[in-house]
Image (cartoon, rainbow, N blue to C red):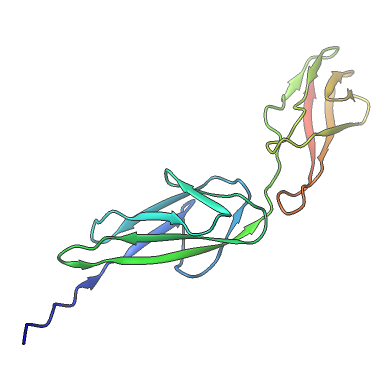
Length: 177
């Protein structure tokens, strides 16, 4: 009879999502199109390979991205093993959640008598509707007009997309000088 093959020590894999530890087989939340950074280390120093196990999320260059705003997806990982460490594998499941719409490039101040265009779309391409609150400014379409010195508040809204992203409802504060 031959000698019994040695039992190799299991590798220890540590994985974080945006700096927070992931627990194997325990679901985490992942919002639609949010860029979630994966950082992984193996105690053995072996290379860790990641693969999206479902079509509802992707993995590339250290980032996992949800392609839907509801449902589930999973990210698989593996190491090849070597002469002293057994190969390791497992998965991290994700509950997909609605994406958060936002508006970028909004001005912080505007001179009295001047006009400036506000962003027409959210980060997801949804049309933004604006409404001035008070008399220091006015909005027509997405054009902001500074009327009087003081604080200009503008209500910004955008519709939700079912199963993808939540509605936007926020108040912008712009200083009129």
